Amino acid sequence: MVTYRSPHGVNFEAHRPVVMGRNGMVCAGHPLASLAGIAMLQKGGNVVDAAIATAAALNVVEPLMSGIGGDGYLMIYWKSTDSLSVVNATGAAPMAANRERFLPQGIPMKGILSVSVPALVDGWLSAHKKYGSLSLADVFAPAIDLAVNGFPTSYLLAKAIAADPLLCEYPAPRAVFTRS
Image (cartoon, rainbow, N blue to C red; front, side):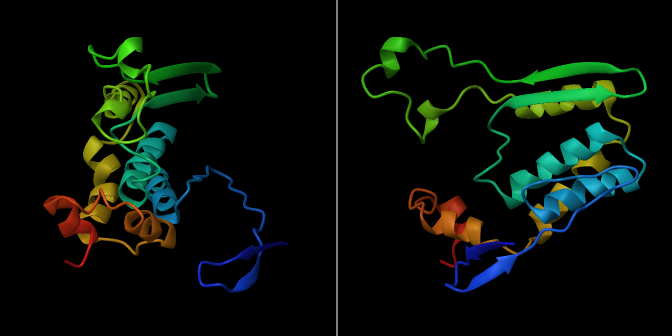
């Protein structure tokens, strides 16, 4: 047992039971994202369909932790052929990015100068084209549903939004993330 302090100041014991799956398992930082991946497996999709659905849902429910404006790698192992492949979903640095530009203060943590050219969606699409078994409409449906119909905001997301005054400075995000 591990004891944590909750956001409401209440101490509680947390217990995580052993979880096993016979035909597959999806694990993510948010339960709604895990359910998106599980839905793909239940529809007869494969691990690539489930991974993309999970990642897309994470972009909706945990935008501070996952973002289509970022990059990454997808490592895909097929047991039936004992083959491993990697999809490089990392973006290039912008043309104007050079050492001298960032040398005085380093790369900023926020803003346009903090990012590379986004490549994650391209990586998802490349992986899906080569390995996916369901339609893209099916794969993205759970994330679209969460974005259109909403979801309960986690304490972590609410806290991050409240702590980021820049996020609510502009009309579009203010309309989404605040009551004003």
